[in-house]
Length: 194
Image 1 (tube, one colour):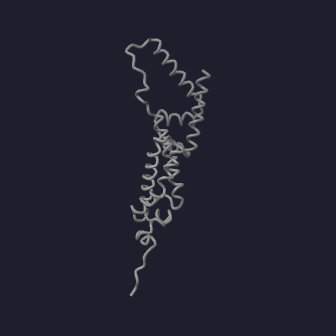
Image 2 (cartoon, rainbow, N blue to C red):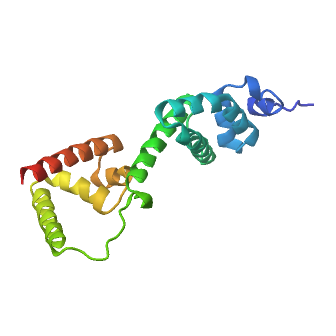
Image 3 (spheres, rainbow, N blue to C red):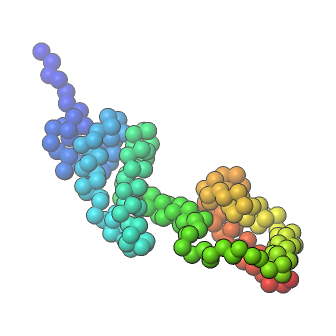
């Protein structure tokens, strides 16, 4: 008679999840989509990740960032990807990226209570001011370096995220963010010079 061999993963499912390493739990989720193993990861890392989110973001966003980090972790592990070691570090990276993505999205939002009341009658002088400002902006943009114009066009005019822009420009997201920052500074200087 041959005895059935029990794999370490099956042994973990028999109740040893609390003592399992992050690597073993991640492997279980990756291989079997084990909800029990993922729950053990969440139980182990939720409080530290939420504390980290509170440390780098406003408290009102911390809960959303924490939830988003675990949702992304589940998605990656379920796809057979994600971390093989350092699950907490991976989650912290997700929180940082989600915060950056959120700031980029929030920067494009216009809150209606901040808008002035529309006037029913416009002064003809205001319309000419708008034309002058538009011409100044066009001239300032024309003086920018081509890469600066491109990053501003993609992120501001086409409303693309930094990640999308990075792919289109062949850069990594951090380099794209730095390039956008420099482009905004250059545009400001060009506008002030007119």
